[in-house]
Structure formats: structure tokens, C-alpha cells
Length: 426
Image (cartoon, rainbow, N blue to C red; front, side, top):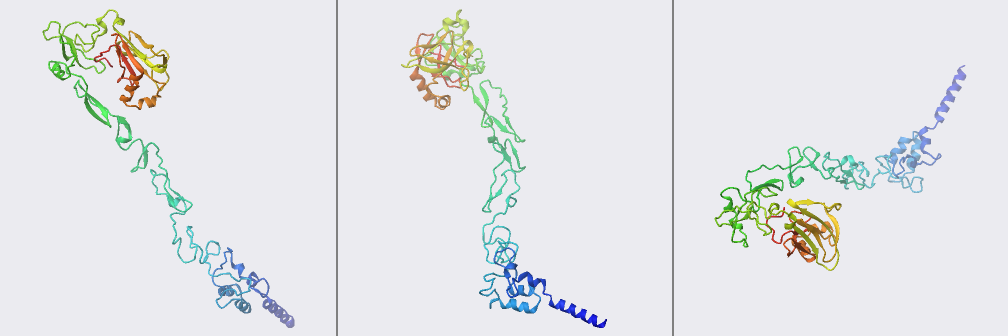
């Protein structure tokens, strides 16, 4: 029994002393060559720590440690001719192939060159979009570019204004964000400007640049004893000697105010009172209207307006007409926008367009200019075109030059029923 225990103990000792540490075989290719390349986990050519440390940490048997150290040169690196020649030491992150001593520094939040600093010496404004967002809505969402620089966002409000204090889109911040006839309220909404009536019949409140502006009505005079005196400076040079120039007895359209006009002083006593004389172009009864309809039994004997193409070629135009009381009468089949309430028509050379009983007729030479070009011209340019292409024929039996109609938003060439109209344009 004692002999058997001795044999077993010897066998166990042999087994234990004959074992080689598992660490040894983890790095050896065979019994004589130590392969440090197996310690380069990320295959970037560097291992963690030094090769001396690697020998001591990977091996337990001193003889193996000595064999491992013998493969290193005087600088502690794998010697010439060894399987690991060229491998370097001191990798500070052997799980990342972009991190090793001397590696180029990248904008990635890592110490790529193992010098203890992160992203030094390079332009690195951001790593991702989260590094750029300033948290402000009004200036849009910033993003991080491929070159790691923050890019400005696109303002999100479009045609609206951005209230930076509250960081929200609103209709307006100041009056200039609204139309000229609107104002920006305290709730950042555009609303029309409302002007108060100043009580003066010869002034009117108009909205200019978001504010009410008081403007005089041209030709207006105040009813009452002083009204006639207000008109003295505007007396026409061709006023007949038997007419008086003063303030009208009735209000006149379209502003419904008293206007400076004429009246016939038949008996020379300095006062009006005569009935209207038809066809003379003056306001005989002093009501502010020249040759009103009531002065004749047959209205068409007094009125009539035509416009004639005076060129040698046909002209395509759009037109409309005015009847009694200056009512605009659209043609039966109005021209589609952009020309409003106009009829398309071709005017042959020398043939007039118009008719009896009309107070006026408007035309625009659509064959020469489209609407945007026509409206973009100055009044002088439009007037020149009208005079070059058209001539008026009226109830007076006289030729007259057309004028630009100030009451027509299309700025059309206008012919009146009288060669000498006074206060008749609407």
C-alpha cells in the first residue's frame, strides 16, 4: 500500500510538471517561435503595452519567457527575421484599427494617435447633427456636414415671419410684413387700417404705408357762402362771359361732394338759376353736372361716342362702353381675365367702334401689348400709343385725341361723347 501511494504521487508530479501553461500555446506557432502578431487584435500593426511585458504576461515558464525575450532586439522590438518583425508596441486601444501611436487624428471623439488628447489639431466642429442643433426653431435645424462642420438650417417659416422671442412662426412682426393698407397687431396678425372720418367733406382719409393720411379731394369746395370763393383760383380760361364759376349746388359723383363748376347767369345779376342748356359743354344750372340727361327729351340726340382705327391695318383690341350715369356695361361675352369686363374685337382701318347714346368707349390695343407690358408703361407712353393708333368721333361732330382713362384700372384709350368734357369722368 505504501509503495502504491508513492507511485501515484510520482505520477501526479510528472503530470503536473510535464504540463505547459495554456498561455504558452496561445502565442506560439511551435515550440521555438513566439508569434506576437496574435496579440494585435485590430490588425493595425500595434499591440497593447511593450513586447517585454507581452513575453512576461503571456508565458509562465521562465525558460519560455527567456526564449521570448531572446527574439527581441536591443530596442525591445521583434528582431530582424522573426515572424513579428515590424510589429509596434504601445497601442492604446487594440480593439480599434484607427487608434495607435502616430495614427492620423480624426474627428471622431477618440485619441487616435495615443497622445492623451482627443481630436486635437484638426477642424472638428461636430461629430453628428446633435452637436450642431442650437435649440432655436426660427433659424431651422442645423446639421453636421461630411467635413464635420455645422451647417446652418433652413428657416422654417417660409412667407411668414418668425417671432424669435417666442420661437414660433407668425403672420407679421412689423407693419412692413403686411400689405400697405394693413397694420401688424399686437397678436402678430395683419389687419386693415381703419381711418376715422375727419368731418371735412373736401378731404378724405387714405391709407398710405400702413397709416392714415389726410388728402384733399381735387376740385372739391365746401357748400355754403364760402364755397364759391374756394373755386376762384380754378376758373377756366375759356369760361363764357355769361357764366359764373363757383361751388356746385348739389354733390357730384363719385365722391359725392360739392365741386367747382359753372352756371349760366342769364340776367346778369350774379346768380345762377337757369335750366341746363344742352350740348354746350358747360354746367349751366350749377349742379355740378354738364349737360345732364334731363336737359333733352331724346338722350341719344345729345350723347354718342366712337373710337376709330386711324392706321392702315386692322387692330385687335379689347373694349367696353359707358352708358348713362357712367354705368360700365360689359359686353355680352366678356373677355376672360386678365382683361376685366372687356370684349375682344378687331377694328378695321377707318371704321369707328362705339354708338349713339354712349357716354364713352374704352379700348386697349391687345395686339400690340400684353396686359402686363401695357400696365408697366408710363402714362405718357400709353398716351403716345393711343394717339398713334386711334382718333375719337363724338356727338359734337368733332375729331379729338383719345386720352388715358384715369378711372379705368386697365389704363385704356378713352373717347368721350364731347370734345370738351368738364367733370364727366367717373
